[in-house]
Length: 272
Image (cartoon, rainbow, N blue to C red; front, side, top):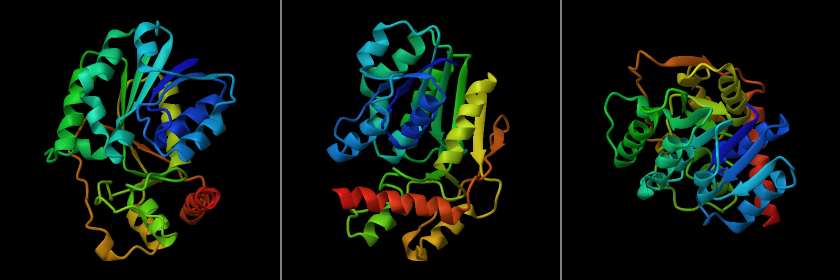
């Protein structure tokens, strides 16, 4: 894996994937889907990776028109879902056409773990399930990586963890409701390490990333002093027998990981 294309490169999990790949010396072409992100946030992210000679920001048109035989493509449907941007998957089927028509070495799609439920019961989940059927079934070199709640620096305010931190700073937007899966939670640095390990083993399939611990989401919520009335929890029951469950080890205690997110949020809001 020497070259990677990331669609939605400045989204939460994808941005951390991009930074880690660049740290490993891998060439990354990144497409930013949402140009309406707060300008100061986009600028901060570009400063973090823009000076790296291995990174180039390109358009979807560039990706569609250039060869990809030796490239892996990464798309975070997870990020789109958590930012209420899943309609990007519908736009003229452009993204699915790029994935299907280009000769990618591997295809990696990050997916919210809710899609593993027996019953898909929301419009957003139906959009994602339909997208996966259109893009994954024709491709043999596909990795579907299902993620629970992921937290850490740059987590969007559509997650209740980040919303609660911004509320303490009087910077929160109206909360849209609990969309994240609350059976488990993983620190983004640990998630990215696991994602890259899976990408490197060359064994396509469906993987569910888990902490292997009981009530880890609850433990994070308790550390952030979230009240029960804030939660309205969504518990996940997974029936898929073909899923490969990958335990993601914690590299730091939950309190340290959450402190990194809190301090990063404070710094961004202090600067702006």
